[in-house]
Amino acid sequence: MTDYAGALADTLVEFKKVVDVNTEAISKARAEIEVLKAINAELLEACKAIVACIVDCETCNATGIEIGTKADACWSCGGVGQVLGGDDIFAAFDAREAIAKAEGR
Ligand SMILES: [Zn+2]
Image (cartoon, rainbow, N blue to C red):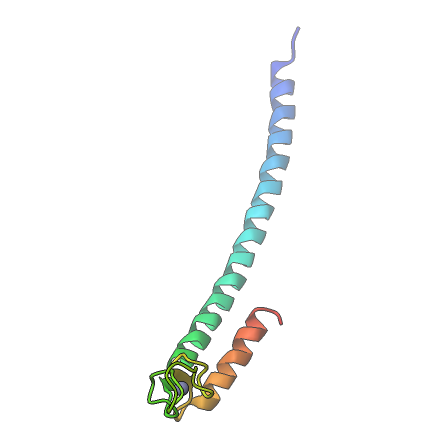
C-alpha cells in the first residue's frame, strides 16, 4: 500500500526548508535595501547642498568667456559661467566629502 500521507509529510518538510531559505534571503535583501535607501538619502542631501552653492562666476560675469578675449574660456570657471561659492562654500566641501563617503571612496 502506498504511503501517501508519509510522502506528503516528506514533501512538506522539504517545502518548509525552501520557504525558510527564501524567507532568510528576503530578510537580508530588505536589510540591504534599507542601507541603500539611507545612502541615497545622504547622497541626495549632499547633492542639494552642492547645488545650493553654485553661484555666477564674478570673473567673467557668468559669460564663461575670458574678459578681453573673443572666445577663450574663463580661467576661473573653465567656461561654465558658474562656480562653487557663496556663503555656503564650506557646506559644498562637506557635501563632497559626504558623497565620497557614501560612495565608499
Ligand atoms: Zn568665469
